[in-house]
Image (tube, rainbow, N blue to C red; front, side):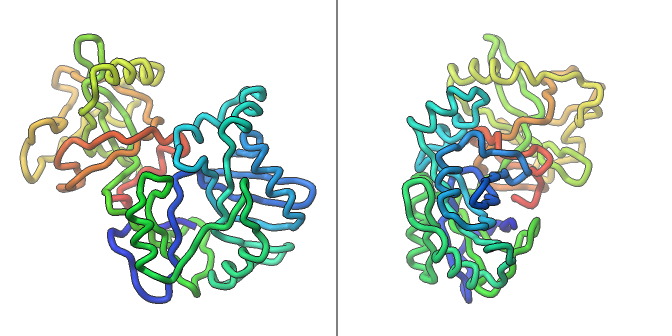
Length: 317
């Protein structure tokens, strides 16, 4: 189940939870085995043996929805998804992760109903331990507002859930509240300047079968520009077959060109950008959107290897 973005906390029959800065994970648990799956179905169990052990110790057959976190350190969490077994074992000791459970979907083979009932059952089944714990929740908007004030300390916002709501896989039936305007965008190209170094990242969002150019990230230190070139060179792709092979920003902007914004390009012009395979996802902050484009250059926050590029659509804006 997913969440739709809002800027203010809704009121009514809601429970509010912190939105954790981690990897979304479904846990299928029996006394004999634990299967952890990402939002897009990728297996995660081998990377987090300490989480697997904690879940198996429950001794119950459950399906849990939650977040795998290394509290306050998203970069350390991403390093945990390493293929080498020796490194997996070492990092499990050095930067152990915790499974924060926020929903209980099935208990002993029985699907549960309204969220309020699921929450009560979750608190009965999941203890608060070092490697597994239930998420805090409150009916008090003042408490939820304080969680919003803690953004950057492992909390990425607040999720509001209707007490009587059912679990709807794939539906945006919850509400996530963020004060900062953020979006996960596809990096489908770069501009490069002498150095060589990256001048700007070209950002896109999917709209149906079309990858629409929405803006750029261009504010990097000199050292970071050189690092980005090394990070992205392996994604360089031919123009033929690229989503932007026939151009981008071909429609006229309602506010004209702005300093620092990415200009239009079509194949009749000199190619001043390098196409990349549209696979890498970047989380950015932005201020305003005009006609489906960022008014000013966005600010790069981090890479999102846990996001599928095709899932980055305009419903975030």
